[in-house]
Image 1 (cartoon, chains in turn yellow, green):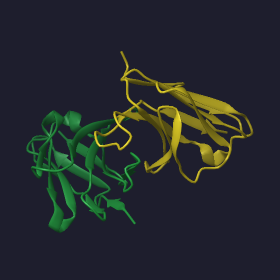
Image 2 (cartoon, rainbow over the protein chains, first blue to last red):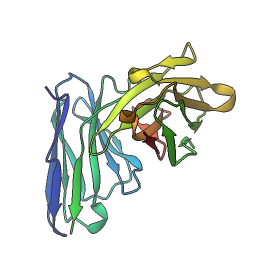
Image 3 (tube, one colour):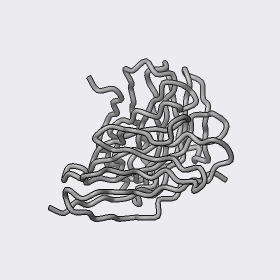
Length: 114
Length: 114
């Protein structure tokens, strides 16, 4: 059983399209996150949710909208995709809202915008 | 502002040799520190973490790290490297405010020579 699963693993799409990435965790964790890893492998937080409540909303374009239907799921919807959105997007979860125990990461979604 | 620096972008060691990966942090209080490993095409896996207490922390896969407050460092070590250790290694610090946000270093690529 995969602890944090993301779908799809690869996503190739044209500029201007709208796409979604789904994430599910079966660990019973309270908090989930989205991180973006750029081409230089730099990881930056985008959003976090604790039990369906938005906690962190970093400086991210409004085209990105997270949705958490329940504490086991955190999806990321992206409108009007741009070339600069190409990156690997990681979902993660943590046992508590303070991250004291570290994260469990999904395997990532490689988004390529052409 | 909080930050994490990994001075070595790329390190090459011979199989069986010892390894030390450097991590320096900037933080205004007692930090929560983590080391993660990322294999190609995979998500990040937690190797070890430090909250408080014993400054020498043992992790998975034979890794250990030592917290040195006076040097603001949290270096990762392994006495004998295996070819399967070739990967990207990230140091991270828990951000102030207990939001669960982690700030990552830029990563160190480890190459293992046979």
